[in-house]
Length: 272
Image (cartoon, rainbow, N blue to C red):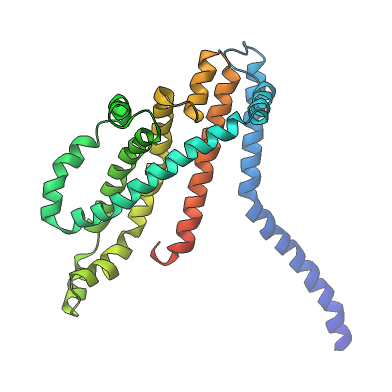
């Protein structure tokens, strides 16, 4: 019996190895597909650029050389840091104001009726329409750009939070009230946890819109930032710099969104 067991044991181990390998390959498949898609896109970009003028479409190698040039003199790093700081400040302020505002508007009819006309009016006016006024009222410095990003963020977060509050099951509210919970207890133990997914969704959408706003604001009144870099490249007919700025915006947005998703998953896992 001992000999049979010892003989069968390696066979069991060998059969388990392909199974483990298959699981690892399955887990790595999405990453490999993404890599193939990116490489294929770069190859297609390079091939198309060979058929046209560099002013119209610079090649991958030319864009890479431009990125190294901008990194070498510090322009790209300064631009990324300037845009990142403005986005985080404006977006953070918008979330900090939009979440409690949305909760109170969703919970109390009087608050919603008082503020709803303003929300519905201003949310349809794009931030770029206020660029000139922001510069006049707040100056050409950082405050005007942060204010525009705040304007972009606050309405999106507020509306998503209102939707989350109004989506709470009324039976849960009545059950909490019947157990003796007051308004504050109901707000913190029932409404707020149920609204977290809506808040996170609103914050992620607002983050994307913040990138749209910061580029517009920096093009109009900024010396540093990715929007300013793109505008400067346009003035000097450096299309490869434009591509570097656009790619940097995309990578920065992807990074911010991933960090936000990971942070919310770690901190708010039980509510999502």
